[in-house]
Length: 375
Image 1 (tube, helix red, strand yellow):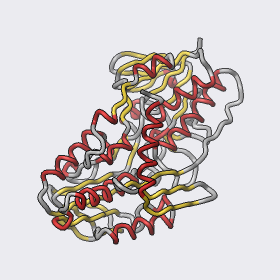
Image 2 (tube, helix red, strand yellow):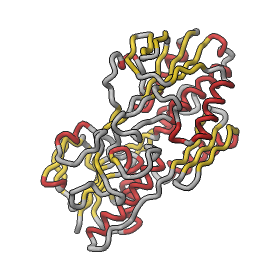
Image 3 (cartoon, helix red, strand yellow):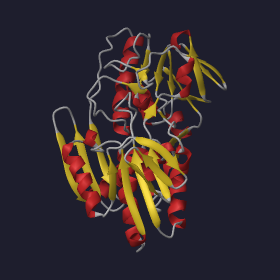
């Protein structure tokens, strides 16, 4: 029986499992991850306000693995051998006939003093730290921003920062203490969020103005101090700094001969196959894919790529034509804890619907629907 190995238990890895089982009930699947858990990171935006707690966003996967007949190998990947046929981990080796890399990305932590900033999308603990810091502050300046990978424009996480920004403003207003705080949004981009489309950028800027959020845009980042943000356009004090740097590939990629993009991600073609490798595929944040410069790094895109990768790998193993491609689509709700702005973008259209309470509840409803398949 053929054996497929999947690296990662995030959106792409789990979507690959579901697609493989949809197409083949019998093939052997092994998934490698540090824990048999899905951490639903889109929900961390609601941790500071108390709408979500840690236990709401960590989904144990043992039952899902049992239903899907998945062998779980608990460990951290350290490298590959034999052109991907052997995955090395700190808990032993795993052989395969086909491999899907879905291990996510890694934030670039090179800016001087970046240890003084919280990187929200690093996980639930980071969101809890934001919650606790906000609760302890009696007033002052809160600075939030993001940057990209200069060698890989698509390798960034901008959307969640807008959500933390607007959500923090909403929370402080609900607590009747917004007047005690100055909120500043910063980015080296002159038009942050431009991958969402021109209408969305204008909508985001208008929302900041309406909420009395100051901006510091278009200046290259220089670094941070304990209570200071430093850019080439000047510096300013901040009592709390949230910053999302650009993304690159996992550290274990360095222990392989897999081809890398200029930004450090795995180079893939439109079929999600890693260039020059037999039966090795990639999906989600780990990969660099052909497409427009606005192609997002988000859960929805990871799901679409994972379905493509799983379908093609299975076709290859069965001696069929592996010609599936993935739809390039950005779709999100920029939430502010009580309302949401809907944004969608494809290669032929771009839509933005202004903030509305209904979109907030749609986002919460989607979370319930999405997670029920893994509970």
